Length: 126
Image (cartoon, rainbow, N blue to C red; front, side, top):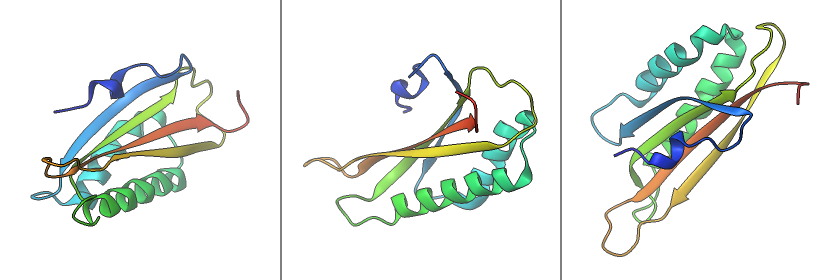
């Protein structure tokens, strides 16, 4: 079940672009993230190098979440992407930052909760 807090507007300058929930077993993590992320941000017409940087960051974070120790290993992850509400020109340099939220498994729970949020932004604009 998706965490409803992901779709809430954290700040008026950010808009929710998409969310993906992945189980630890039964999916090709790298390929699933690549397909989802490429389709999600392709309409923004971003440079290929930028797409590769965010893709690598998402794949690495997902892999680490599934390889944690018994107390911190996630049985699923949520990937969430936010972008600027005002995108302006399609040209220029883009950046991103990643926020990982990990809640360790409590007694009686089988796994930790892990969400990975990406915030895309236009460099040099406030």
